[in-house]
Image: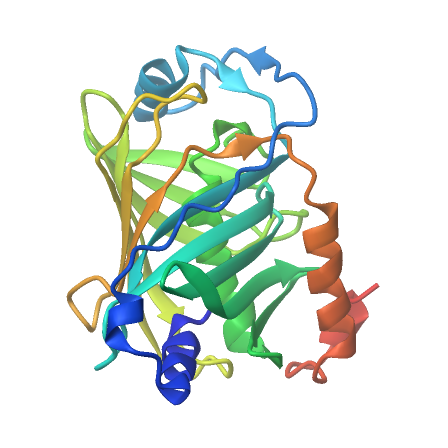
Length: 289
């Protein structure tokens, strides 16, 4: 997710009026699929909860997809900032890369923009033209990527991905390094034991700063699931730092669009990474090609 703390700080510097921030952000226009979707049966070796999720949300079949786009609108608040209406768009190479764009709106019009991305194995953030990189962003990008990508079952069968059911209502998601997927990751996922629909995704620690020296537990909760032409999707997502105790971001997302053209967004992020600050960690420049 784009560094909303920086976005909130920029909003304070702008001195934008509370009246303008009281109007909800409009929903961004969704991209359309560039090809007809095809479907596969689920892997019989997947845990029982995943099969319940597939049966509930996708009528027992797995849509094939290598790219996806999520859009939505909502509100964010950090520190003493007021709740700011925001709209967002995230483009994924599923399981591998993403570009997330977040805009604060004033009287419904975007006025402040932030971007976070994970491309070529590195995290990058841009707020008001300022580009930031660092090992903390590299690490922080991975759980965010999977908190969205896991909602698309096409990634469940990747060779780097391992699901383990730990109870009637919980799973562990592990993504191992060594392949093309964003890794490493160990996340806990809770789900409704009857439908398999997830209620939370959490990691024990996620960096809060670009250097990766400060951090806390991090959780995304999913609720208000509803049926859509693309399958069941959460109607509300809330993001919480464990050391804060209450959500700082509330998003109402649309169901993801699958098999969309995201080349331009990825190209822009890769260009920023190549022309941005020097990598913070040794050897990172070798991954930029």
